[in-house]
Image 1 (cartoon, rainbow, N blue to C red):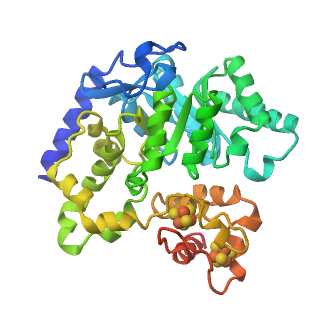
Image 2: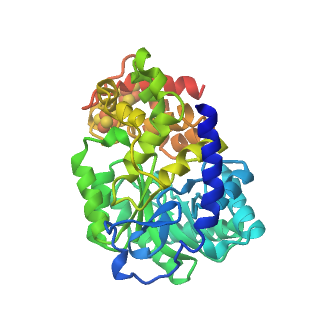
Length: 409
Ligand code: SF4
Ligand code: SF4
């Protein structure tokens, strides 16, 4: 059975490469049909959707390049039909952008056939600097990103890691992004958000300047109706929605799987079920699951050609214990913060935990922690004999903090 699946995936990858050419439509105008929610179209083997007002028509599965360090994986992803590659200034100290540029621009020479998105980040402690300093930091980062990517422009430039609506509305940030857009160093602007997503996205909808939002969406949010409605409204407004962190909680899902059911849930079933759950929401134009291995590419890409759940996937998603576990996963709402006497940035700590525990990316975990003020990071916890912080959903914050300290020790 496993062998048959492997062969089919290889066949699929070979077929998709030949059928997706021409799917990508580059342009800056907004066709009337570009509104998200429009019935999806199939181009060859891959389902495509339009990324809001950008007009880009993309396969519903894209590549999160963040943890990848094998150029061959980027090449194979392109050859398999993926046309949207998501990287960031800070990933792998710049080597990630360099790899994307080397493979797509220098070697394959397909710059005009792909959508390249990158992110630049002013860390929270620096966000109160004078406006001119913030603008100058943005200018330097985008120029460095373009140099590494070997291109004159990116398609989407995100402000990275926005959880505070006040930062989204900061004139220095807005001026920086608009200046970069005016200078044609990016075609579209947006932001990524990992916590407090509902409030931040509602703010963006009022502002009407952000074209694309890269947001967290995974099965642990299945009952967060208010957030799902917000996403739907944002897409209806023409904002292109890209989903990230689509399968990142899988280690915790596995904890929930009863022993007698493990035969259903081992291997790719969890990955494909979780990814399908995300992209079955039509307001999501595309998702950027991270690929670090060929097996992950082979597991995730077929989701772009069929959104029907298999019986195994249905059983996994409907399993009562799995759903119960979902209710105990951090959804980054921030409601625990007032319960910590030291004001530790608790919602960001599970993200660092995820990078270290689920992705095995200790560098990114440390980067996440370093982006916080020391007084609000995990160091502040060292004086607490007992963690007083309480989660409204029952997440065991003390346990996650202990695991994080162990992972990063
Ligand atoms: S630990 Fe709980 S209260 Fe705190 S951000 Fe996560 S879900 Fe919200
Ligand atoms: S251990 Fe808990 S209560 Fe103490 S600083 Fe850390 S998060 Fe806050």
